[in-house]
Length: 189
Image (tube, rainbow, N blue to C red; front, side, top):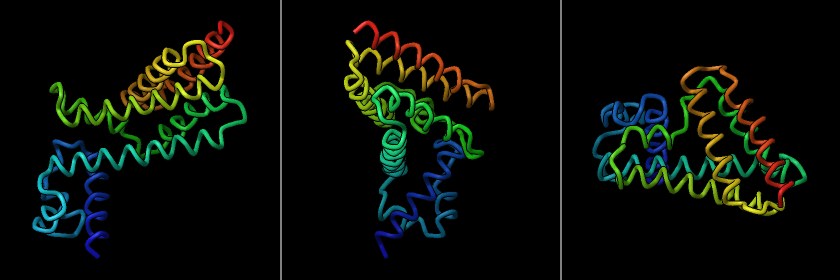
């Protein structure tokens, strides 16, 4: 039961953090949403900061798994798989629950350099770039890290663009630009 309660508290907090923002979500709201007590919350998460970092770890795991699933079903060639990553984000951005990237949002709320939240957000994007670089290398890119960095910027920009104005077409524009970058990068290998 205790493991289930811990996971339940984390799920409730994550949903609130994503929907309302981390700093605007108080412990009382989390306790209420989880249907538990402060004592139980603090048993598993000694501070709100611990809960925030657990939320980001959970977001990292679920987001990367979702991306990997899209890659696995996104086509046969590494080029198709690179474009499939953007398609994964296209689906995410279309959901009514979309509130932006949890890592970009968290980093904006905790802008102090070397803050653990900033570090967690940077670690997610480093892992994401690494995944893209691996696909770019498999596709025959002459500079997979450079292409991965460019694609990461396109995707992050599209996420923010769509967060600012829904149905903006940002992800479609990012996909078009990504296809051009990928083709250019692969033809110059």
